[in-house]
Length: 389
Image (cartoon, rainbow, N blue to C red; front, top):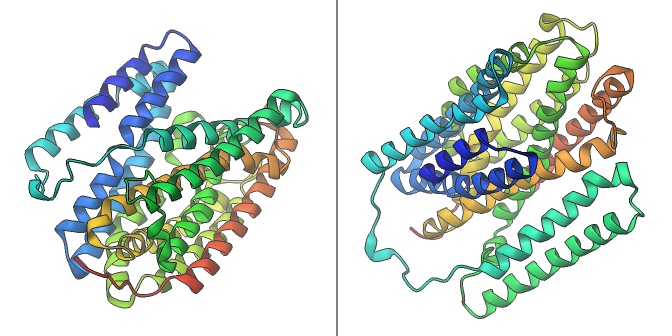
């Protein structure tokens, strides 16, 4: 995964056209899909008790740091050179990660590998094309009209394909085969609730990131580097407090920190709605960023621990993959549906009073999503009770 990610990233930096760039980004995403679920599964099987919570907290904290340094470095590279350097600069890190995983990664128990397992290619095709049709319709609809044949057909076909995907996965489960999405794991109320919370809260988080950068750059006059640096306090807080939150979740259960974290994130979204033209960094952006960082630090590690703790340890990789997919789906639908819900659909200029007003509405929607996530956690998540190791 790391090597493929590096190669496709270099390809993105050399892309001759937008269709080529989009195709390479698709391949880059496929390579990235090999990384995150396996990294969490490694932590789950390598640590026990509070140490596992602290390890997940470290994972969450450093993930936040790398996520923040990306926009910061990318903003500097865009200002100083070209967008192509944003991609090219990533390749050495991916190759370094490949070397680390070969040198220090656990080899695993080869006797436990299921050599007869088959990949669910049909399920992958149904899910990918179905999501592409549904999300594509949401993105194109505001500009072309939801009643036009292309948009209507794409949306209906996407929905039908996703229904077909669920039916196909259920059939494979009944045949004791290897479905892409094993529906049996959703028998756990905690697992289902934690993933539903992921959809809600990560939809809000991705919506914030999606709209905050244009608001800072086009309406408040920040350059790309300054906008990327605006949220650095979030990552400092997460790096410091996420391991603590992971230990707390291992000791008292993940529900309390998840609820508190989601409610704190909701308050941060309300504060971000105040980031309007003329607002200062110290008076508006920084307070919102600090509250946002506290909410994430309190929530992310316990949420991840709740997902992994709700299933058998042998299914840690599957659980991690499903939760990661839920987070990515949340980002996908946030980019497609949130602007539409906030009255920004079809807008071609991300600046001016109309965008600023829509941005504020979007932040309140994000606050509501975080509040809904807190309710879901309160009623579905308890202390992890692992069935077997």
